[in-house]
Length: 402
Image (cartoon, rainbow, N blue to C red; front, side):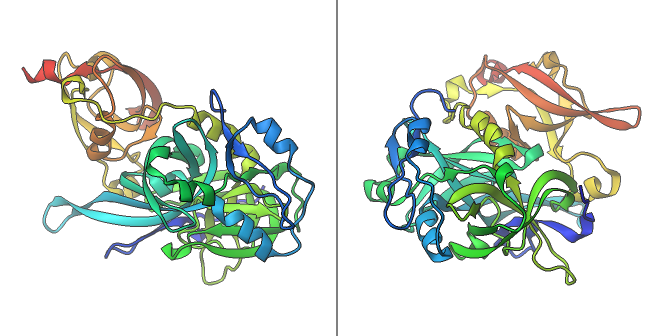
């Protein structure tokens, strides 16, 4: 497998709209809404209907689009734009303090399933990371609030959910579930089509070929180098805002989730997508997670720590993991009982990545005292950080306030 230099690769996905320069580095249980194929002269059209996946797939005809325009028209209803409003933190060495500012970035997503209550959309983890507020915009330009259902930072995948009650009937009739393909069966040189929210301007279409398979590279995510493997390479243009969008074959099947691109003056036409055969089992697990809503104050959970985010400069210069540096662990607190120690760095809480205390506090509002969850922690030992998983039984906030 070919490795690319980290300097040449950036996360290509979320394009940010702040004054700060910021292109960030470039089965469900029960019934599942699946794609029902219809022969319309333009190929299979997916519509939301309660049927088994197997029954839906069996109806899809052996079909190949004659041109990109027909494929795009049929596939665009399965693509959404995602807007991420978050709070970023920067350190001012001149003033000796940290500052927070609001940031808005744009990415893409793919409608992949629906259960009885939610529309489920896959995207990249870096598109939704740190979100204080998520908005999904559909093909008919209507928008709905979304919540993160689950993330897998190591594979840069995430699933977000939209409450069906927040989507009107006209929009439900306009959108489609993407048809899953088989990226393993793709041949180098086959034509592919990328659709996504490039530069945050709305849906756009680019086309090219599958240039290579099983690529391995290091990408800069704005904080550190991240290694990706088994990627599909394409010369279809992948631009900021395309991240989380779809890479289709000419049958209109989803074969990849666009994620990164090469970005140097000397480089042209090198975009990368996560193969759907690799992503699908991860997405299935993320979709099966419980979608949480904020709990009442009297049931609110308590952990018992204070901490701060690791500044980007520290991560870059010293290799300290990005996350929440634990400054204080309360005596007798749930955190102490779980084995958390001063100096540990929390990177993940119940399957969702966290970088700041604000991220953690936002997640905590969905948990009740008495619940037991797992969190991922980096602990320093012998001059190096080692990852471990801790199980913590959360306390009841009201018990510690009295």
